Amino acid sequence: MISLAKEDIRHTLGKFIVTAMGVGMLLGIVLIMMGVYRGMISDAEVLLNDLNVDLWVVQDDTLGPFAEASRVHEDLKYTLKSIQAIDKCEAITFQNLQLPLANRKLAVLAIGYDVYGEINPINYNRLIEGTVLQNDHYEIVVSDKTGYKLSDKIKLGRNSYKVVGITHGTVASGGDPLVYISLKDAQELQFTYTNKRIQTDRARGIINKDTHLVNAIIATLKAGYNVDIVAQEIQKWHHKNVYTKVQQKVVLTRNVVEKASKQIGLFTVILIAVATIIIALIIYTMTLEKMKEISIMKLIGLPNSMIIKMIVEETLLLGVLAFIFGNIFAHLIYGKFPKNVVLELNDAWLLFGIVVIASIFASFIGVKKVINADPTVAIGG
Amino acid sequence: MSNIAIKVENLYKSFGKGDTLVEVIKDASFTIDKGELVALVAPSGAGKTTLLMMIGCVDTPNSGQMWIGDEKVYDNKWLTKETRKLRREKIGFIFQAHYLIPFLNIIDNLTLLPQSNGTNDKVSKAKARELLKYLDIADKEKAMPSQLSGGQNQRVAIARALANNPQIILADEPTAALDIHRSVDVLKMLKKIALEQNVAIIMVTHDDRMLPYCDRVMEIENMGVVFKDSK
Image (cartoon, rainbow over all chains, first blue to last red):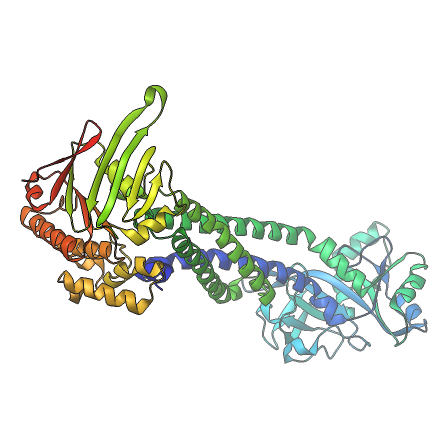
């Protein structure tokens, strides 16, 4: 049996492929948008997953350092350590910094941790060069996205820091690269002012400013303890808020990246709608171009089913081909985006499903045109 | 089994209603036998195409009766829901232009309709090759319509009209785009086909020079059909 779709496509192969590539690029952008969304969620959870702690103790009435400013005293960790359920416990700081580059500044999120402490926030699997911090002063571990190399010197505040390690894939919820410095350095950067500022503060009567503050205390539990029950107990203390890892993840996804992800999601939906309309228009145009032939086919007696099959097959093939081109396009360009783009197979399958449904929907327009086509048009009336 | 290819009785067709009613064909009755080549002539707008489309089961008459071969197909209404099946199985069409499907090669253009009728690929191709040989274009089966001359394409169109073994062929000005020599060639070919394939051919034409090659001339006069001498 002759396949009308196959023969028609073969007859106009170049045009069909170029059309599919055009639609494919649009679908590629849809995939990239989905990837940007996934990237945001993934980035938001990098630090949370790398730390992999059970509890986050933060300033009362705050959501913690992922979402807003939080300050607690560093010595709170000793109090927490006295709890039987606590296994490891450390102080941690989060601080936005601008790293100096050759001709500009680069925004990063600096994580300060106790180099000799029990919890190291650096995931060894992400360390691609060098080591983690070895000394509690003037060393820094940077993300490869910063562009710094091992042994480079970075001027921060009043001191110069040596790059001792380079990580890959370490980003903050906002997409900024992560850098790691010692807790002491972090506290100095965050809470110590210049000599001139100290003089001015003293003149204003502000003296002995407490620099032993951190943004959160993180802790892991011993085996056999229920994290929720321990969190509830600590929550009874004054001036503290406690979050479990699950709760912090919710904070990250609901409070930190929610609006951005909704925006990306809406943009993706609009792009899908645009792609559907474009596929429909292309199919409509392709059908219109064949109306004379369709009228002839109807006049000589060809059943509608054969003509409709041609339209539907061409539409589906266009959709599938565009999907393949879209995937190739997306995989070729996703690495060029400044922020993390995560292309997931499930998203690709979801898009494939949408494309198939959109193609079938689009083919209805062509099919309607076929059903309504007047065979007498073939002989001019 | 009779020799009648098409029989029409009291066929009536009008468009519009009330004040805008336009009667086109009135009480048309005629019979055309298998093997006959009949010319259908009339001034423009007299209803030639309308009559052709009614005979071809494309346009629906308002009333009357119609038989294709021994099968009554219309009795004030179509007696089958699938008029397109009637066309597919019993009628061949030839147009002023060849109107071949441009994205199908010649052999596929010829086998498309028989295959849609359920004829298998091998049988339909054998028949198509036989027709191409019959019309002296056997070497063109793999060519695309765009690669053939106008005359060659018109032969393919004639072959397509024969591919489904029709009882009648309706030809709408098949020589209008051809010069006199080619037109005569086509007419001779149609005459030969009518006789050898035992099929009735009704051909609309404006060219009086073609009439001597036809067995009979059917004319639309005062909305009715009359036969005149072809000489």
